[in-house]
Length: 188
Image (cartoon, rainbow, N blue to C red; front, side, top):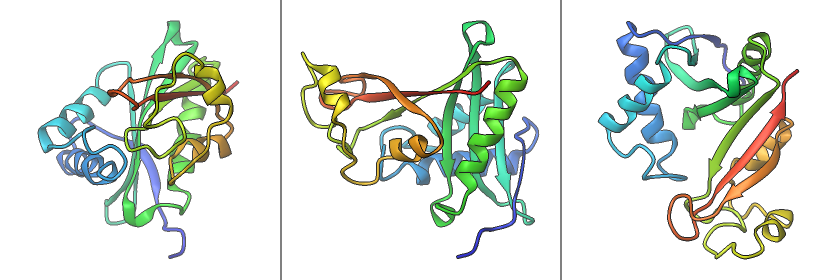
């Protein structure tokens, strides 16, 4: 498939179709990697509503038919010096076509323009997709992080290609052997 034509726009409270599609995308987009993240439509709609709260940013990539190809959320922290990227999801049928990369670049520009120095994110490993999953990371957490391997398509390598680095890990964040991998990137 060739790269689709799309534009990145603000998600708005009053656009029910976009909100519905964004919520559906959370369910389908995370079904394989994090099935407990947003298992139901009410869970997913609550996440979209949270991304639309005042002071936060929610952006969608849409094609000419107003189909949501992906979306990203961002929120300032530490007096605006740092922004958190959460969530990022791309329609499974449109992955590896530059949509995720474009959404992250768009959020980076927005964060930098707002005065942020750093963009940060957490990328969970609930399904043992890395060498950090399914094991007890204690007591040598950093030893495990230093030798991390991608076993089955975990997105941390996608973020590394965009310039993010691993800044830490929270062992057992999602239950025993299910860590959250923290990453960050300087944006200005």
